[in-house]
Length: 216
Image (cartoon, rainbow, N blue to C red; front, side, top):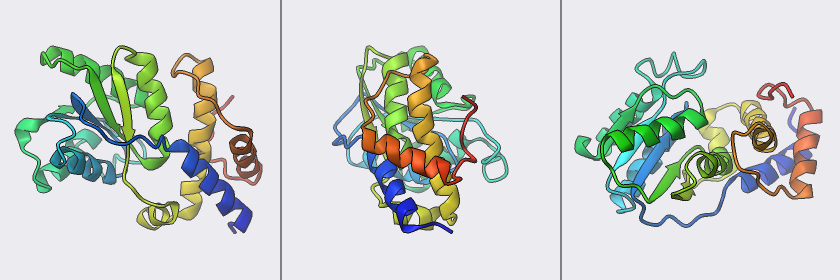
């Protein structure tokens, strides 16, 4: 049973995880691989709006995607973008990354190998991972400007698209935990987390939304 307080806390985490950046033209768009094809949709939309001339889709497979995306997350993203009218010549595929750090590092290497001059990147992720994606890129690629983006949707819409409310709340809790843990492990830059966000996270964690938590 998900209580009214649980939903209120989930909204707090959902809102905090989104950076609120206004999309602006960048050197390249990087679509971060996941189970969510909405990332490919959002990347294609931003391309059509002229926000970047080139896309990198990055991602191998994970436990949650190996059945649905057997060719790899990046390749399935590419196929989706082609269906949406993005030309193949505007897409690079990075098929090996298995976490956000590798997404950034391997995409950077690929672009360097292709001779692409990059001064700014528009990172496209799931809505609740915007902030961690931003913090990761700032740590691993500090010389470029970073803009975060995702599908513009409300929490309830995202839950409907996934079809499992409890899983989404678990993922929100896991994302918030990583935002706090990863700077200490050298994976991301630190982010200021308001006390009311910490309190919302702790209530959800203590309420049993823990399947996506890491050992501390």
